[in-house]
Image (cartoon, rainbow, N blue to C red; front, top):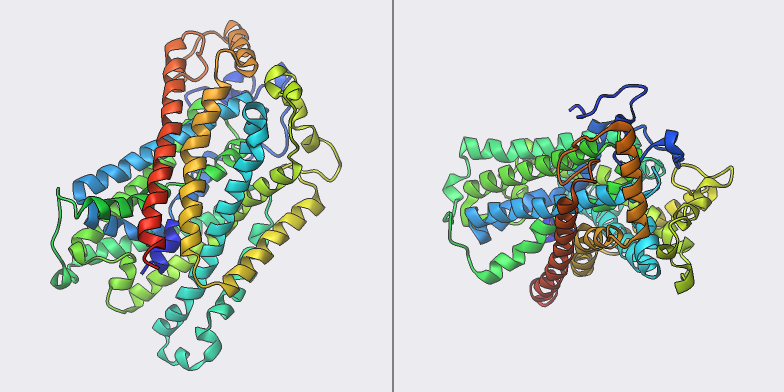
Length: 507
């Protein structure tokens, strides 16, 4: 959402030995086939690096170009602090997702699956919000392509302006749809790792472009005042807060990454979170500081558009197009999964609540294990194709008929992004890790049995496998998860109020 507002807002290797006979290398999300657990679907094929690449590409979008403007309103000290704080809270939400996934069968983790064993009758609400959010962001990517490509073509060739279809946004939206359609039909997120690499190269070029202009100093004559400690105003600071908070939204793809990663130990999955958030935060801080020091308070929402027209700045605009083009399939993937979950949802009677019987957990995924046409994500070929086609066709129609989704995305981002980043991870973990939860009790028993077989070992942050002696860590983690959910509600209210005042009201 922040990416759309920017362009149109005129807005270890593992700690454990990996040996054929070692159970340590597969502990993280309770993947222990030898102890009777069946792996569900297509799992265990993605590497650590491809997981990080896909997650970073989901995080970092065109919204990075708005970071200098955020610093101009907040001041350098406060702006950098908010960027790092937003990364910390988003990273903690991702970490809680890795913890929640331990309570589910290997390869079957999803918001829907967690809803079924925590808040079953609210599952349809959660997945509907995720589907709408991802669909809206995907449409905004297509609109960005249609808005930027005519300028890119004219920047590369002045005579291109005389060819009507080359400056027609509809032509470019249609043309790029032909590229993203086959990518959107890939079932596994890991299959998008190569396009994600290309997208990250585009991000790298944009970062180099901003840093190079700062080092060259060719913007100093237009530079405004620099605020180091002072902010512009409380109102201006609040107006930039949603852009920074939403810049780390990637939680819709985290469960897919956890399902597909080959070694799903606690250390490995946690390192994916740390590496992805760390790289994103580094990019945001670097672009924010160098971009702001280049233009000062005169900086605009899209810093690339402020540079003197040249081949390098034109390539920068093309890099944005490439970035959002290859980010589109990363929105289709969770959107499709959420729509499928909504279609499968049925009201749960109190007497049938999953909390009443741990054994019911296995039956939640029986549909995904039956049928010869069912594959890794539990969808049959026909169902998969139908949902994907519907998403692509509807997003194309909206992008062709609407030139601005700013108002809608302001509210969708405020509710959807805060829900999947903070509120849901916090609530899910707080509920499922309760000492009275049958799922938690069963998990603790498995840990106790495993420790008897393997001995005690320490798996790092807030306790990995050695949960028996880490009671205080579990209690701390539960309290922090509840605090994250409350923080998410506060952020949602703040962002809704901010968007109402600064996005919708001025129009």
